[in-house]
Amino acid sequence: MYQDIYYNNITENKYGISMYSVHGVCYKNNIHENNIERNQYGLELYNGCTSNTYENNIYLNNFKDNNNGVIIKNDEYGLCPGGNYFNQNNFIDNDISAKIEPKRFLSLFMGNYWEGNFWDRPRILPKMVYCKHLILSLFNTDWRPAFLPNKIDV
Image (cartoon, rainbow, N blue to C red):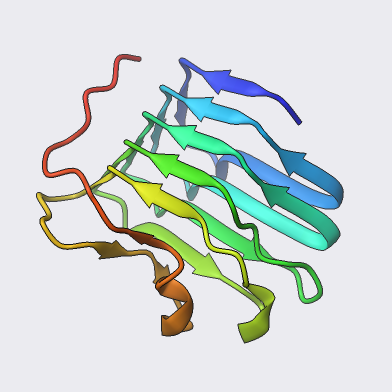
């Protein structure tokens, strides 16, 4: 907890950054001003059975050319990570920009906060983050996406 990950070029890995918590908490970390490119998973947030990954700040990052820019998931018994802040990131040319994969429908009850992110193209309407349970996407929506890519100095 309380880690700062910034000013990195993170490329060609299975996991660019993995915040993987099994027994304990992973919170109040700052991930900012990174180029996260050509990874299978740019950023993974994962909760195990007795853990919680929350209140992390992910901002001003370039997620580019990844298979999955951001993936949020849990194991069969854990809560899906929630209460994390994704602000002013650029999601460009990823196969999937961001997705949430809860193991069970009721395993996700706290949303994440998405605001001012650029999602491949100019948008004037909100951008829902993909989740296999549509109703849960409402709790993971960028209500004010960026119209142009955010300026990020790395």
